[in-house]
Image (cartoon, rainbow, N blue to C red; front, side):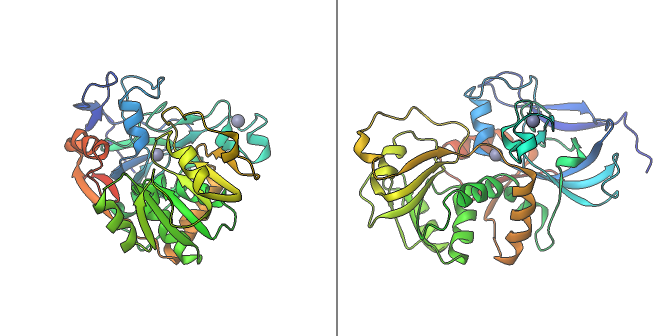
Amino acid sequence: MARDYCESMRAMVLERAREPLRPMDLPVPEPGPGQVAIEVRACAVCRTDLHIFDGELTEPKLPLVPGHQIAGRVTGGGERFEPGQRVGVPWLGSTDGTCRYCRSGRENLCDAARFTGYDIDGGYAEHVVADERFCFPLPDGYDDVEVAPLLCAGLIGYRALRMTGDAERLGLYGFGAAAHLICQVARSEGRRVFAFTRAGDEDSQRFARELGAEWAGDALGPAPEELDAAILFAPVGEHVPAALRATAKGGVVVCAGIHMSDIPSFPYELLWGERSVRSVANLTRRDGEEFLALAPTVPVRAITTEYPLERANEALDDLRAGRIEGSAVLSVL
Ligand SMILES: [Zn+2]
Ligand SMILES: [Zn+2]
């Protein structure tokens, strides 16, 4: 497939933390060995993008094209995919394949991992190149905008849900992009879902009930009954002791975000009774394969708010302000 790599593309670029992304014309990236070239159709906005923008994740490449929930079409490069095939690019961009984590099925913890839209230019652009081994074929039954949020909100949510074992009474703290997807999976597995939001956030509470949560209320208030596990999606350290207080003996509190404000000190009594607190870091390719096979069978439906690429700054502002129901997605074509 002949392509003119001299052409340029539109991209939204982070030059410095806390400065608005700048619309720029960049050269269309050319695939190197083992890389596939992709025409981006949609890229969902993740809270991690906000942590990068805000300088809370401190070592992005700069200038950077953010975005790690990319749905697009292969235009060339690599050997694994046909031109025209629909693929997704997630947060995990590459690993060394050799460290003790990679060799033990824990590539999400790889010491030398590189991440899309952080170490590698991502999908807030018309084109992207990616290591073909870390891309996923995308399931049918979703358009590009609907499928994009599955690639991080869905995957990380799924990994976090697995960490809760067979917990029946599940608390979800923060009801944004990841929770709205994983609530649907949890309900399909017969779990009971309790949604914990900012006090008085009636829109999020109604949204959670619409998606099958049987209760929705204040994250720092009392839970209606004991939980068997909780997943914390909101990056709020105060939620850790609150969730421990709500969780039954033997239960786990899973922190699913990449960044969180400091956790306040709390009495040991909250942890006693074999409760545990753990984090979830990144994803493995296996998580992606499992979740993208599972999603259409539920079926998991992403509720999206669409923005044209040029309005990426507005999408980030709306995410920060909690104005988005479900996932914000940049539509690129
Ligand atoms: Zn993400
Ligand atoms: Zn490794």
